[in-house]
Image 1 (cartoon, one colour):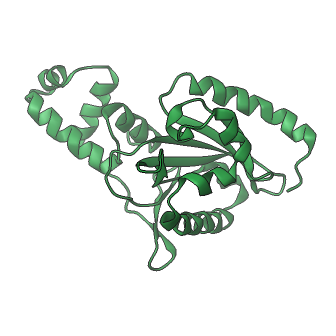
Image 2 (tube, rainbow, N blue to C red):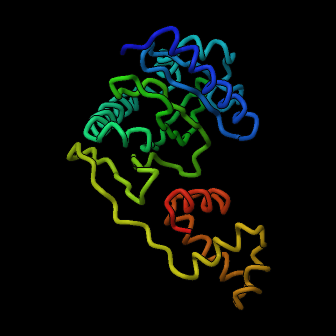
Length: 238
């Protein structure tokens, strides 16, 4: 990539913003530099560090993946990486900052223990040619027990695509549709109302509210109501 030292000076603003964001979230954050193939920033959250110093993980960059990801999953991640870039370069340049990808994999926190983490990546700066230069990654504990789907989302539409390891192709997912009741519950949850209060507003009991929330979490692949609201807003469902 044609990335100059002056470009890296401009990137300091992105680093400062991610550092500030790291103080307001319980997720691990890091910035991948695809030009130098290292990490420009790694947050101090211990989840992603696997017991290592923050500076060591940042210094190792790509090499860190090979040390903490089980060997049997590395090929899978390399295929995801290749497939994602193919998808990316098939998109017009003006759409490339609108895309994000999410998938999960295990990381070894010790020789005997491995955690399943949710990993989300979105480009934050492109080269002059439209290549991904910098990308923001967020890491959180996965609520699932097994490795799940690989999904690319267009953050300006409802469009979502899932990767098939069998056909090695991306398939567009059907659009997510919320029922009128689910939309009502989300809008009331935004106001901070409890299940009981939401039930009173909608003339249903709290257990029915819980049932609808459970269905919402399944539809939106959310772990809690806060995440469900965020995802629904990003998908322009509310």
